Length: 337
Ligand SMILES: Cc1cc2nc3c(=O)[nH]c(=O)nc-3n(C[C@H](O)[C@H](O)[C@H](O)COP(=O)(O)O)c2cc1C
Image 1 (cartoon, rainbow, N blue to C red):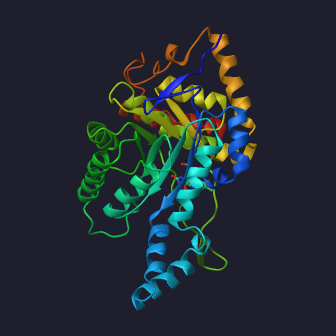
Image 2 (image 1 turned 45 degrees about the vertical axis):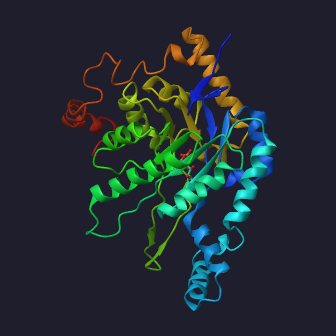
Image 3 (image 1 turned 135 degrees about the horizontal axis):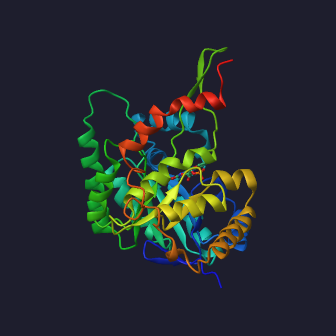
């Protein structure tokens, strides 16, 4: 009998498949279908600082400055005009009550006060855990990277002292040394890491010579960075490792587990292959485990991590150099003529 149980943030999950934060989960029908298809947990769509600020502006409409800010916000984010934090909190509560599987609320704030106030309000909706999305985009040459790291660590310290629920942090890979910041956050008591967030980048339309923002879902090739970091982190931190970005299939979940992940979050594959594809992913994992004689995930989790792999070079610079020195073999696949 194959057992797919795992633990994430100290919560027992029936399998490692979590439906990640996206607009999909704001649809009650999707929540039900995801639960029926076997999803082990759901991350509700994030509450964003912009939604919080919009409501603050609407409440204070006597002040000219706020009126302008409100108008600007609505112009910039027309879709949030009807999605203030009050409504969001109500929707999270409803979503939590509509399913039996664990529900995780997600917050993407900017100011420390918003992080704390809304983490506490989300906690009161009855969810099982909180996910904090640290979405930082470098925009200037003056901001010191160490200062950004310090601010994030300070926010975590404050949050840990104010909320009781387990917390996960969803990070981007863009740190000089992601392993170090993760280890520092782990020391502060973060219960899990979602690795990694996928940033949407603007593109340029060369006909119109203008920017546009393509709505781009991930592809399976995008999961290698998550795979590498799951492998590097396994056995080095107390927190759970939840791999994210480009995880499409049962094979991808198996790879992440072999590297050392406790669970995965998926969004793009669910958009592309529909919610019921979760069943296929689960049965593919089971079939593979049967074929390899594994009864539970623990039997192979981290087998190919940095800590356990027998290949001494796989996570090291040597592998990269080796690959580049041998790169002439690419010519065989892509001949010049
Ligand atoms: C339409 C859409 C909406 C998303 N909304 C959120 C969000 O509210 N909060 C968040 O943390 N991530 C959000 N994400 C990012 C996903 O949770 C996930 O991190 C990313 O899509 C990478 O996973 P994937 O490769 O399985 O899609 C969104 C992604 C998509 C495609």
